Amino acid sequence: MEYDEGKIGRIFLLRFDDGEDFVDLIHSFVKEKEIRTGHIHILGAFLASEIVTGPRKPVLPPEPTWTSFSEAWEVLGFGTVLWENDQPKIHLHVALGKGEKTLLGCVRKRTEVFLTVEAVITEITDIKARKKFNEKLGLSLLDFNPKSN
Image 1 (cartoon, rainbow, N blue to C red):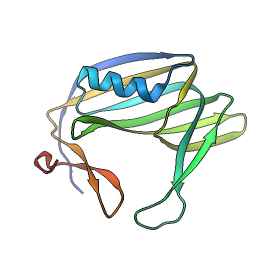
Image 2 (tube, rainbow, N blue to C red):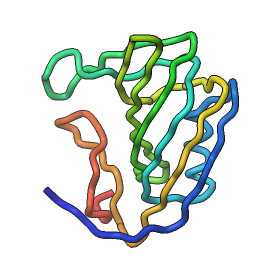
Image 3 (tube, rainbow, N blue to C red):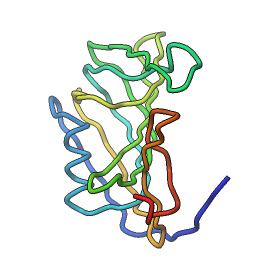
């Protein structure tokens, strides 16, 4: 285990409207505001997208299982904000519900908002962590050595 300690910086409250692409807008906002490290909470509804709902098999690197949804699902999510090289890298997991059905997974592609999504982004300061691609695992990991990026 590795860790670092920081402080709370700025806090942003955002509203996304019906039909907007949540993934594109959240990345643009984080980049514009230069939020280098933080976390995100979201709630609302997504109309449609595909999410990663786990690996196909427990092998390294894993091959993701993509699961599609449509016709508006309630959403509750939590994620981290870090940067990899010169781009924000948002790792967001969501729970989606529609009737008695539930999905849980990682948001990576265009995701259309239904009605509204509210988000709170809390910036964390005094931490130099970044994301760094790990060849063996086939994904970007939290890295506490910023000189290695």
